Image (cartoon, rainbow, N blue to C red):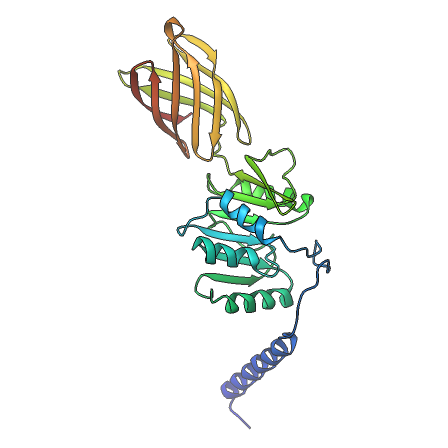
Length: 279
């Protein structure tokens, strides 16, 4: 009889061999997906190559970006991001056979060093390192993902084929091959009160209200409170205007970084540095 330690090692090795054989048997090298086939929550309809390129162009994908394709299907979006835009890409696909098919497509394209296909659940896998997220999911799935997406780094670009995000309005839309793409830029959280200081020692109170990328509010300066005008929030970039003394229009442009706000305030020919903190 084998010693206990060797029996345990042998048993573990046998289990791994059985698992490996089962995995090999489960992989069909001749598998090909068919349009309209059922999946976990959706049916598979491939995104037209023309729309794929439009989506990645809308997102301004660069070689410095990391693209996550949620529900990767045959891997076409992840492969295009690597081939045409030189980005690193990760596809997450629930169906193991489809994921294997996508990996074969990645290998055929010679993109193994830039594209990785994960067999997994998009609601469980971590894609927080993405700069760009692409998806072609049903509206209810987009809404389930929306809270997670809104917690991502401000400025992350999200592009969807065909379906929107409910009352979160798209920042841009585009069409190609008879299909529509929507893009959102994850906005920085700016709602609340801010203490803002300008060159020369003046301070102001900025009170902001926010619904996704739509921002409004008031600024209190020199004892006078007024509405800010033309506010725009695009990722971490915030801009707005207000009327100061003698009705002169002041324009702020800056960035939000967590609880810090910095930028410049331009009033006619005067440009001041602005620093702020969330209260």
